[in-house]
Length: 413
Image (cartoon, rainbow, N blue to C red; front, side):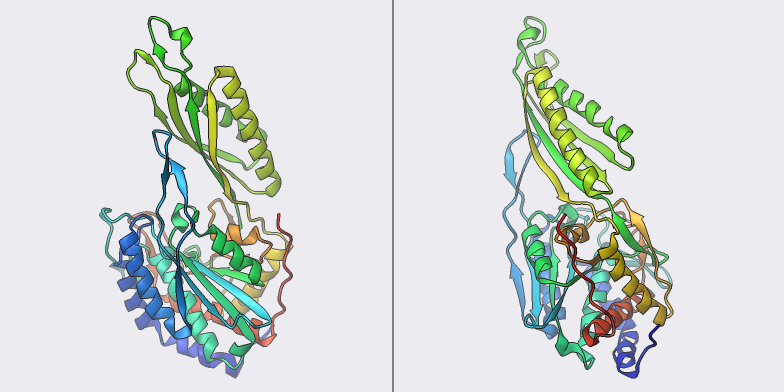
């Protein structure tokens, strides 16, 4: 096992002195509402990130890819997303790291949860403090520490901070995938668990909307002439809900059904939304085939048209040998810092799923310790900002110096 060298200790000690400044900054960032649909707030957050990360190099704010989705009437509507923060440093270097995060939160501009407060000494409650504005500060300080080390020149990196992670990264997926193909490893700054464990394997998620087009008719005079779109989607949901019975670990959540009107009219239109989650790529392919087959069966049985939008925009991220090697490297760095690093599987998913789908070794929960994310009880254990920044900084320095071997990329599943 390695021990901390004098050259490594200097940047690590610098991070340890940054606790007060990091706390002040995370409180200021938390007070900026950057809900995924608040474009003005996302612009303010992007400006704050430009100012903070600008010391590392020139920053670009990239327009997201255009995205549309069906509304509750079945009409495709554009989905606006904020601009993507993109920074590239030493692209000519032999080895490159992709560091990814997101600036958006789940709290809209009119949500009552808008400002940070101290829940108790050392524990900060506030929108985005854990997920993941605290994590962005961990990323920033790890990179600033790397730049103070004697090995910085040997490591290139890209930083991608998107504005739509909480709404599935649809506008930033292409940029993330391209950056992943240029990198040797990926580091993502989602929060760790309160006890410090990382998320290991992650489920993949398929998010779907189904538009049903039937035929209207009078419910009393000639109901047989109608084709009930609401009934078709309801039947689809019942059949989909049976899938977990025949596939261990797979879950289906039927989330919403809209359509119809007066009770004396056979409804001609309906929209249903559901998601499927699973652990493996084999299960993903099976689920995709099952969804397609059930949609075809229901459409034929009810004599309606069913149009499917969406799919597995976040594939599963199994903890295979490619991923495990990078996790072990993080564990070794943690041991030299006096941190016990462990991990556990998570049913949640994030941009780490998308990066791993490019064959990239990824650790995607290198952010702060905290909890109750996506709720008004969200909290950050503030000491974990310097703790986790030191962990990432040591990992980066050892990769740059050659003290750690670079893991091999895996195939694209």
